[in-house]
Length: 133
Image (tube, rainbow, N blue to C red; front, side):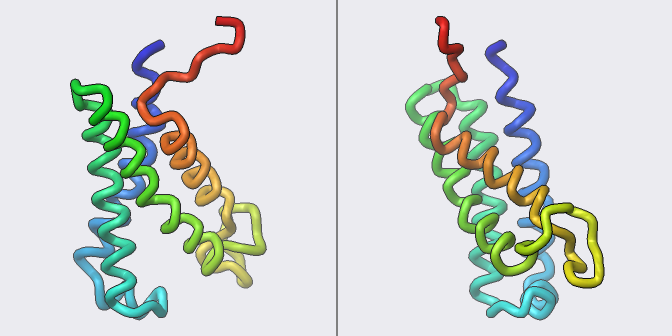
């Protein structure tokens, strides 16, 4: 199934484009909410947005080596964002459901996004091969 990568790609891109654009259009508010310097929030927003764009472009590019690198670079931009989100906001609770100690929820969803990103870093655009093939 040569096109199944689009399910993973669409998942990452939809989440990161949404959050990246949201941050870019509300930098000061996001800086206050996250209690991070404006410059750091800008870097996070750009990593999310540009990373998402590169993952999409990697899926559409007809030159396989370029497509592979676009995908890998885009996914690599997302990894530090997810590690930061897990460490700073979601650590200590697995369930994504918000509660008094974790008002933004636990790390379940962020770990999934992190692992999908790592999958694209490791595999690029190469489809997974079965062991017996």
